[in-house]
Amino acid sequence: MHRCRYLIAVALVLRDTLEKRGALAQIKARIRAEVFNALDDQSEPRPTLPRENLLINELIREYLEYNKYKYTASVLIADLSCTEFSLISYMVIKKKVPRISLLKCLC
Image (cartoon, rainbow, N blue to C red):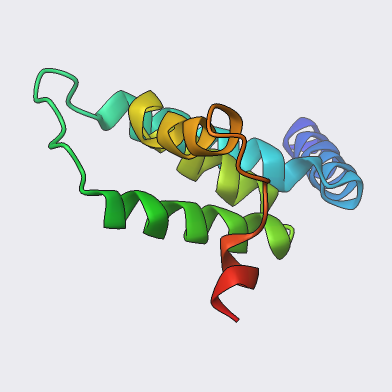
């Protein structure tokens, strides 16, 4: 019985320490991303998104990063296909368009 209480106490201290360091949120986000990846059906190809959806995804990503939701943003980026994310990069890098915030452009 004492061993069980000891393990619970250690788990609580560990959780509090990870939470104070900001690591707990990162660990939870990483676990969520891995669960989604495990559940994602790779045998069924994703539909090609129109450009409007690519811009919406970029706006959502910017919103998350602006508000310091970096772990949530990392899950979004992991869920986006390379093609979706690379279109924005192509527009910025190849076309030499300055990297300005889409949110600022809309204001």
